[in-house]
Image (cartoon, rainbow over all chains, first blue to last red; front, side, top):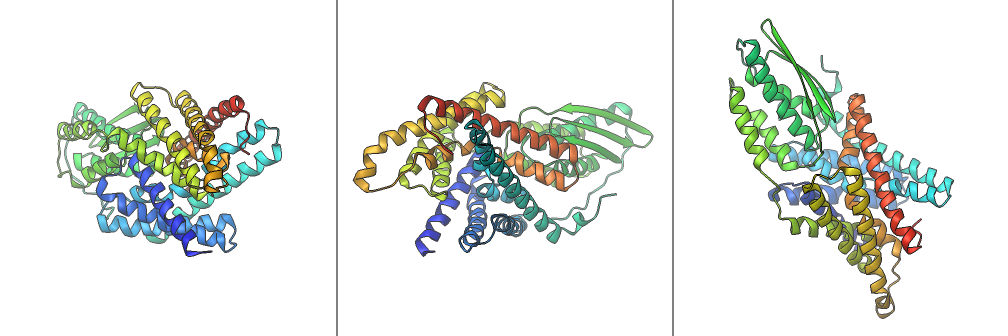
Length: 147
Length: 274
C-alpha cells in the first residue's frame, strides 16, 4: 500500500465527511473537527482492510475509533457527541451493498442479493457495536439500567 | 459533560402543569426531528422538565410521536405530540442541548416557548448552492473511495449536486420521503450516466479505465438514510426496541426507494450495475 493511496483515501474521506456535515447543518466552526474524526475512522478501517482484516472487524474497530475520538472532541467543545460521531461514521455506512440488494434481485441473482444484504447488515451491526462499545467504555452512567 | 439534573420545586395547578408539559414535549419533538436518538431526546426533555419544576417526567419516545406524563405535587397530566418529517439538523440539536443545560432554575413555560420559537426560526446555516456543491463533492469522493478515477468523481459530483438541488426544492414543497427519494435517485443516476457517456472520448485521451458502475453507484449515496440507520441501531442497543425497529424500517424503506429510482435508469439505459 503506497503513501499516495493512503493520502488520496484520507483526502476523499475528509471531503465526504465534510460534505455530509454541511448537509446535516453542522456549524462551520465544527466542520474541521467532524472531517478529521471521519478521516481518522476511515483510515483505520481502510488500512485494516488492506492488511487483510475481515471487513466486519475493520468496520468495528473503525467505528470504535470514531466513538472514542468523538468523545474526546465533544469534551473539548463541550457539545453533544452525536454531532461528531454521526457525521464521522458516514463513510462506514454500507449504503451501496444495501441498495444493491434489490438490483441483484431484479436481475434474478438471488444469491448475490442475499449476500449483499447480509453483508450490509453485518457491517451496520459492527458499526453500531463499535459506537456502543465506545459509549460503554467512556460513559459509566450507561453501563447500568436507569431506575 | 455532567448528566446531573438540576431540580426546582414549584406547585402547579393542573392547567399550569399542562402548559409546562406542552413546552417540554415541543423540546422533545424538535430534538427528535433533528435526528437525535430516543435516549438523547428523553434526556433533553427530562432536563427541561426538571428546570421548569416538574417533579417527575415519564416519556415514551418513538420516531413518529412522543407520549409524556408529568407529575407534580398531587397533579398529573399526559399529552401526546406527533412527530412528522425527519430533517437532520445538527445546529438545532446543539442549540437545544445547550438550552436544556443553561435554562435558569424556575424558568416559566412561556419563556421556554419563546426560546423554542427562536430556535425554530433559525434556518439552514449554508446557502443552497453550497449544500448542493458539498454534497456533490462528498458523493464524488465516495466514488474515488470505492475505486473510481477523477472522471467518475466529476460525474458523481454532477449527478449528486443536481439531485440535491431537486431534493431541497421538493422538501420545501413538503413532498413525502418515498416519492422524493425515488425521483432524486433516478435524477442523480441519470445525470451521472449521461455525464459518463459524454466523458467517453476522454478515456482514450487520458488512458483512464473508467467504469460506469463506480460513478452511478456513488451518485445516489446522498440519499442513503445514514442518520436513521445509525440511530436505529443505537436505539436497539439502548433497548428502545419500538423506536429502533421503526427507525430501521424507515431506513430500509428509503433504501428500497433508492434502488427503485436506480432501476428506472437501468431499465431506460440498459446497462447493469451489479
